Image (cartoon, rainbow over the protein chains, first blue to last red):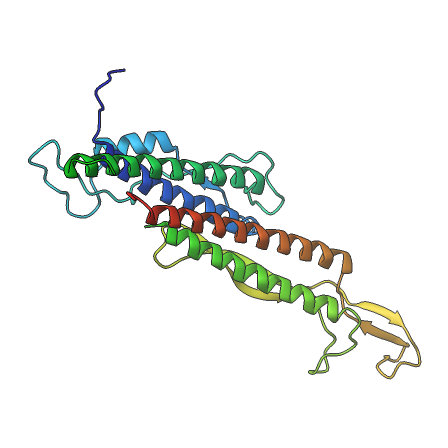
Length: 137
Length: 134
């Protein structure tokens, strides 16, 4: 574990926020479909996907952006995000695998982490602003 | 910003659950109706939920894809002096199951609450995003 940050904090925050809001949407879908027969609950492995997005090994399905400098940001979309199925603890009779309690818990956690990411990003931005203006805010 | 997408998904849930609540209310209200305006005996109605694509959201919402009438046999009550009675003195009563409808109502209102809660949380996150860098 080196003390030198591997990624630009703002770039990191952006990728994390994008993925957080995507996951928020997924969990919202699960909650909304908790009474839909045959619906299967979906989720992503957040850490893995974030690492993958940051390393930008996966190019977007559109035109790949050519990068002439290692510090250029590569545009990302979630079209190729591997969305998995949550394994059901107690599958319902109608084939629905949504457990509202599990989804609500995950939703709350995801909300908390989104807020944490926003705080980190905000403080990074404020740090840079004070570095530019040369005076404490 | 796909937090807006989570919002749209939540509202699709609200619409669907509200319709389910409406249909349930209709069933409970008509549990003792002999014949509807078309002369047919009222039959218990149930909503069908299916996942649906939401515009400008990457994930799916929910919609009411249709309302079906229950195929359960009608309840026959022996009321020989009733004007609607058939030759053997029986009146066709709706096949509404009050217990089922109560369960439906509770389930729908719980899901509705869960969706409202989810939308409130998302709204707070959006407001936090607006304060970024302040």
